Length: 77
Image (tube, rainbow, N blue to C red; front, side, top):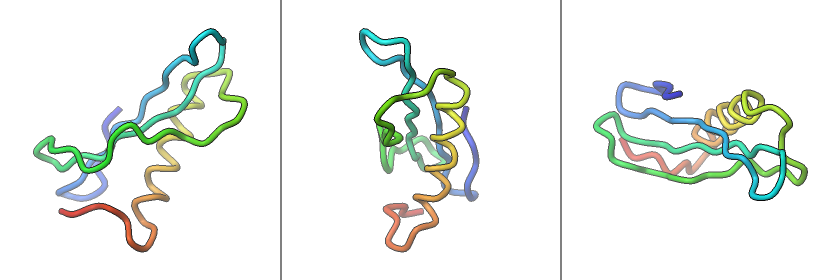
């Protein structure tokens, strides 16, 4: 699901099933509003993964918001 962070920046969070397991990983991409990628394929650090893909997406959303507010974030509007 794409979320608007500012008029110029959006992020897209998603969940992918771990290969050979019944666990999910949360991932996110950061894009300019015009679709140009700024950061892609960022994985939520999780040793065990998530049982529920919705929780994996929620973790990716939280990490994306936190990551982009951090000093020195790689977002260039």
